[in-house]
Length: 346
Length: 291
Ligand SMILES: Nc1ncnc2c1ncn2[C@@H]1O[C@H](COP(=O)(O)OP(=O)(O)OP(=O)(O)O)[C@@H](O)[C@H]1O
Ligand SMILES: [Mg+2]
Figure 1: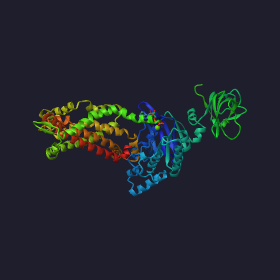
Figure 2: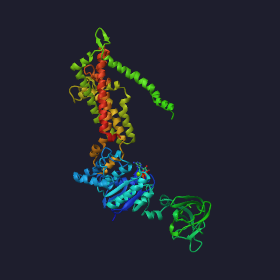
Figure 3: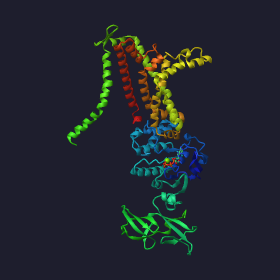
Figure 4: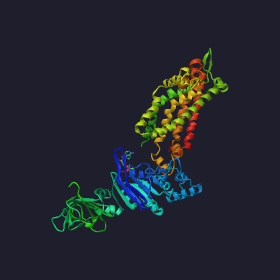
């Protein structure tokens, strides 16, 4: 059964619809990411769950009970804000203790739980530091400890890692995932970083302009994108214009000089999406010329000019000889490595 | 860098600040030093000012209880004014900060309004409203039977405090406002998500963070109130003198410049001590918030 459920939730500011028809079931202990470009309504959705905004339409339920009827202070959710929103006049320990104080946890137990929470995020010994005297990563950990110490039913994270530098962000991602695994808190993470969403979550909700584009596991959304938007947004992809040829039997999918048996249920002009790492150089297939060849250590990146437009190809550096710049090549891929959609506007 | 270039660049700051420095010395330090000197001169009804070095004026201030009372009144009024602006101004700034765009700018203008009007005009306004039997408010309340005799306002300390607080309010509101701008916009949501109610949020989260703003506003209001002249002169008149009005009278009515200079010097010294002292205390106490 769904633990947290959003049922056709919508939010309007004036006449502008910012979130529309948002339905999602989150299982207990699941790690969900809201992924989408800036301004697509991720924060708005999160704030509706948190209770800082009221949905214009739709229902939000936690364990079957209507959450929108509960005051934000009583929802018992843990929230980490993008700016951390730590209390600057309190020490790290006082920050973490605040939620427990509000719950009238006795002093001894409080001290013990604060100590444990700070130790869990790797900040043992920093109890008496004030937030302004801590680094970005440390502040982020205090914010996480402050949200987790109250044993929240759901943990909401609004781009918690976006203020950190690349290396620290990677470290914190691993740590965040480990902590979440250990304590098993149902978690929703808002991010516009596709790598972060993929490496952390059980399922990703890809959003665009207030609407859900796709809900799926990281692998599903990457390999079977439901829309052009999803395939573009999740990593690099090649989109080739093709057609379904019904004049031959069995019907064939044709993109330039690449052909394969057509997938069922499609006809006319289509878009063929293939990830760059799934394309190989072969004897038959799309004919192309290599424009640039970039060596990137563990792989090669080729930018090609194909008969269906520009294409990128990534090849593992497995020690074998690779084509050089200016070489004429044939691009091919296995039919199961592509996704085919009806081409709109053609 | 060569030694010469280094020398030149070391001299540059001095050269650049020289004009301002000269102005500072010319219009502030020299008159100030002369005032201090003046306070040690002698004065007599018929002989005028005698440039000698005596402690007569200081002795008079130290021994005549009239001066002690007057200084005590000056600081009492300044303290009460400061308290009044803090108690009214801090919530005012907080409410203002929560208003939405258009109302915010309108009420900000209302609050800053007093700064645009001359102190004299503003204070005379109070006199028109509350001045004895003819004051507008007094007349209205008496004709309604709400009060039997006019509310005493003119020539009272209460009147001075109220009028001064009105004049000083913008300084307090702006100072608290500046502190509020530094708050994280999500800080109240953060506290709320942890289970804090509105009263707790204000007491535990907002107040401690805007306290430096309240205190620096308090320092401004206190020093301006203690040395205020126009408002006490109009509301207090001849009867209720404060340090500034007394110094003025000594200078221009009695023509006892040395005594006036001594009063002014003492006021200045006391203010500098109080302001510098409390500023240091505040900065130490709120080091974490100021950072
Ligand atoms: N209070 C508000 N009033 C009017 N419009 C708003 C308000 N808050 C957000 N919006 C609009 O709603 C849209 C979605 O905002 P939201 O903050 O949810 O985006 P986001 O996905 O979190 O983006 P980002 O990644 O930049 O944080 C934006 O176009 C924004 O302009
Ligand atoms: Mg956002």
